[in-house]
Length: 369
Image 1 (cartoon, one colour):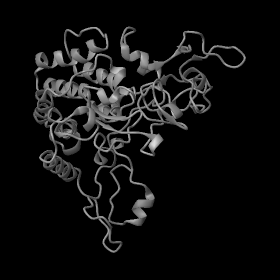
Image 2 (spheres, helix red, strand yellow):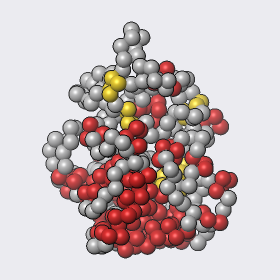
Image 3 (cartoon, helix red, strand yellow):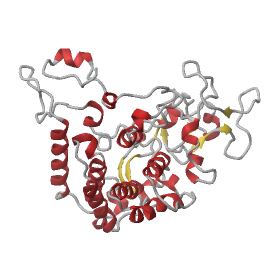
Image 4 (cartoon, helix red, strand yellow):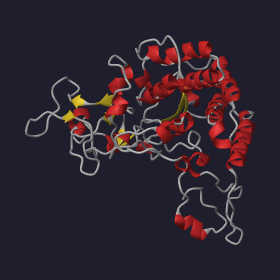
């Protein structure tokens, strides 16, 4: 399976809000819904305000990351976790409510930055390596996973990797060779960009440098998907973000924690909001912090396209891409290998399933469906 266009939508609940996908949704404040009093739809702007109010109220009850023992408190939420979630919410406020809130996004980012509690890790890959995540200075929010204790699991390796990676990484299962990414995503990276090493493409090798081969001796060479309906075993580039190196497995479940927010997102959110406020000179160094960390060349000027592309590189498979493309607008104007025509504006929202509409006549279908 190849995702559209180069990203897996995360299951995280704070990064991709229901209103981003479903439009006007019911706002339910009770534990059990009365079947004789079903909820109707609530306008997106009201949902936005509710989430904002709840998050701001939660801040008062949370400690700052600078005041806790990070090694023992990780990965629980802090004030900075909420500030970061709000910053991303404000970044998308114009989509959700019709009114831009760029300065509020900057203000939330400044609260995280001024805490001094976070910094970029020297190697971005360490944020996804299970044995290094708890000590990361960059992870702001994460969902802890430990399948050996029935405490959640990470199945990126199971569903994304080629079957031959069982031998390469000494896995206790055969990966399903499912999700992959495209040439478009690969081509965003400069060759020396460290983040490009997270994508497996071309001839594949074992960890000791010898060719990774099929049983008959032919080397695995990963190529772009030619036919999404009947792709061959070697078609599709593999995104190895949550590395199996050092991970503990229980069956096909790994213990890499799912990343919700990283400090690099704070820097790029602030940069985008500043640029949209006409402050390109202030925004440029923030983007270059992220780029130079991964050995990408330094930019000398900045456009919105630069920032969108940088987000595509930095957050591939972290659940940002669809939301970002809607905000930048090229979700509608853009085409790619498996989306060959432009989309209309109403397709920013998913349709409410027919079953739900039948079961609850108070729900109103999103426009266009």
